[in-house]
Length: 249
Image (cartoon, rainbow, N blue to C red; front, side, top):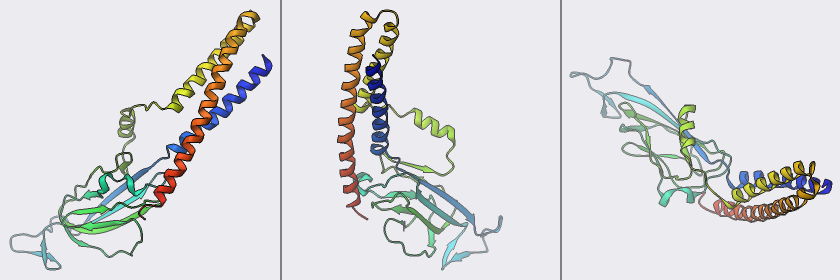
């Protein structure tokens, strides 16, 4: 049983490493975060009255505010342009009309854009994992930002989301049964069977031999399946990564 035990331990280590590595490669974190900062341009109580009109570039305003919207990738992998549902832009509705856009330095690639009368959008493009974009606008009124959901598999979180809210969202996600998960479970069961057979071996070597052999067979089968699935998913991941990088930039 000594050689069998050694082979089992090595198999478990290899299977665990392959499983973790494959899972991380096939399920990289893709996530966007945004922050909204608003600053009133008029002192409290200094709004326009019946006899006073405040105008910006000739347009009357009542409660102008400077709004800074920052969006960045907080994940560990690029987001392909095909992640946008039906090619729909990621849209931030500011909830107040935009009066003026503040000048910004031209940025190549994905970046935030103003769409009048009250929206800021990110059009479908390849979003690199180090993506960051900031835009500043003046709105008339108190901003109340809402985001559409056009990235089905990617979280778009407002910076400062409480851990409680995040825990609730996590608890609502269903466990996805995959072949890799199934064979990992089989490997664990085989390992448990081998441990039980080793315990029995201490009392009755003759009885433990068949159980140990079956457990070893289950473990080796599961190990081979995990390695095959890992290789398949690795090449599939490489193909998807190449496809994403060849998309819109």
